[in-house]
Image (cartoon, rainbow, N blue to C red; front, side, top):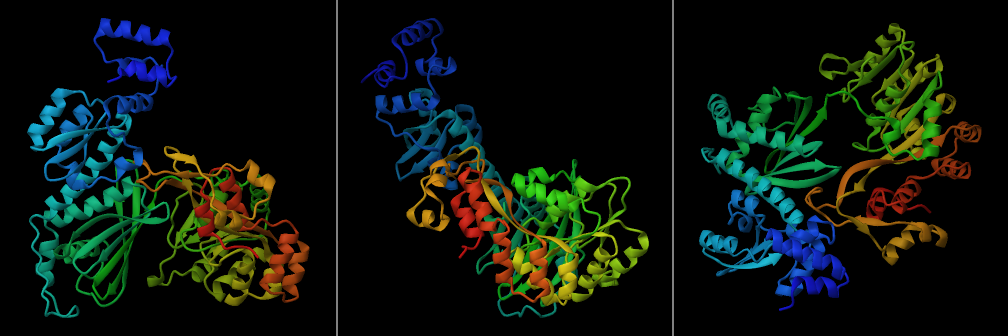
Length: 567
């Protein structure tokens, strides 16, 4: 068997002088050669692992392999032992247990593992850093699963198979059951884990034989845990009580809200319940009520687009419309704009449903349809409050649109949102709502469509070679391809094996220049408006996304899936 130092020499990873010096220090200290070389910066941990793999004939694992380990296998080694000796179980059969180690020659650890598990131990290799990250990830998930099991151990809800969902229920008995510790603990666990994992939504979905809990993280749903079917009634009823909803009503949709108070912040939770054929489904939207910390420069604007948007939000009157689907960051952009232009000289008022971000020195009104405080009624009264700038959370009907237009025509700056697919179609949507064509053409200064795309995880990003189909879809010139730096995320513990961490915006800005206004006055369709806007320099959502993909900020897949191909 070749010596470790010899292999490192043959690979050209270390000079003979450095090896001899390390061997002398090894005699003095008794430490392992690989450990000495790594600590002194002569080689990397990955290089030593590769050399050990050749020396001992053991398999070396990559980071993505350490992520996909079954929980039952990980649980064979107690967490305290795994953390103390930097080992994690990887795979097993009837007699053999594969254990990932950075030091496979530690006989004492191997012997203790054999006694502890009763399996024959086969060591595998990986850098200690990767092993520690895998230990943190897998044992955290095991603890969460264990907490669910422990929380439900005393639960005994009986769901009768011959009773219809709309039959009368014993409300007093149900209240008593759902206030018991197991249900309370499980709901609290789901909420705290969601906040910890940066989730924006929690989906609690009834399946045929279980209850599925998923979190929306960075815009995509991820399965987190499942609970037994018997817990369904208790969990959903517990959430209903927290949101002040009717626990006896299971046939109709319900909406409510409650607030979670943490030591460092408050989180507003909006609750939506709808009946399905397998029981009620609950979606909880988590809104951080802490101080607003977003700035336009941090949202992903290209420099040229930021200059245009900043110029228009500083105008004294007119309307700025941001469009896009639910969850694309429209409210964040508009609040960042208010944060940019607020001053002691202006009275800024907002009407929102709900108030997602609270900003100092801005008067924010939350609508409440149940008591008649709608967008339209709020806006009529706000005019008497002497406003300078107004944010309208959304234009969703003709009445709100008419009031917004009148505000913008009487010396006020109005910022608002509309649900539409892109900037040109936003004009069509406003006309469809019932806003007069000549007023839309006169008062709107800027229409901006936006989307959010996931950014590449900084911990596992790596170069990526696009497929021929992707290159065809990108429609890049030879020079653009030559300068492009495409990347993908391999998947790691930091990003929950998704390859993405965080999101950034892509934007499509349609300035209402005179040629565009004339087209609107003349009744042009959205395709005519699009062609003229492109002729005047508008950058589409797809083109804006491709810019970010070529710089390695996001992936090609994110851009192609989040935008529509241009003709």
